[in-house]
Image (cartoon, rainbow, N blue to C red; front, side, top):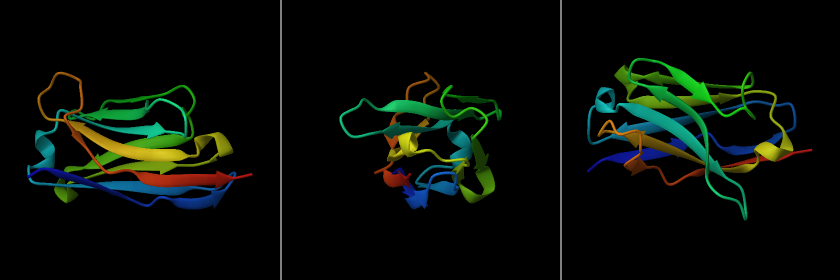
Length: 119
């Protein structure tokens, strides 16, 4: 059974930093073609934040470019999201997702971790 478990969320002041982690189990992490972070604020749709391919290519939402960094450690079966210069508008539930089928659509999701940025 494949599981993705996020951790690292919490409450931080504007301008602060957090690092989210997503630990995977059930299949070798290296088998995921793509891993990504999404977020969903109350009353809003779930949006893509950052994505990293198995080859290490990354892409970011415009709203987080230059502030967030996605990375992966296949040996630790973990994907990370380093978030710096946080803003109140970054407040959301953050979800880890992964695509094992190579079609660009996540087929595995974590349960989410809350990030709250106070002004």
